[in-house]
Image (cartoon, rainbow, N blue to C red):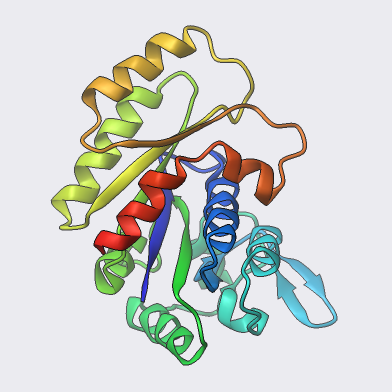
Length: 231
């Protein structure tokens, strides 16, 4: 299945916002979309079980409806690193478990999938494996969300280097003004455009009330859809 794996330079940089924008953009192009957040922490208790706010937003934004358990198969309550939350719950998911869960999406009538990671590129899933191992296993092109704040240049360049050294295609990166105005934002953006080993797929301003459709406006539709055509 075609699609993208969305990762970030850090936690809290707006991966979900960009994933929602990608889904809306592809929905608007007439593609049938699925969404997945394979592992999450910081989940809330509901009558139906643990639910993650970001995963719920992805579930709504995708055009093909699937059970929540397939959108977010591994969900944990504490808002801490997923592998620590899993261990506290007496669980230890393996990358093969996440890959098997991803494989179940193939039974749905969809054209593309957006998979959102947790935190940054090398967030642990268990003591021995990281989400990068999962991303390698499913082989989707990667969209890197760069939180435009002090330190982003180093984080973005190192993340891009790691993604490519792991053998994944860096489809591109998205600059997200997640914390509002950044000092010398234009200069930092110009530096990223010069040094990043992939195209800029969008520049998202600080949005107090972002919606999937509003986020899609700030993504480069031609570049995103064009990449799908090559994958």
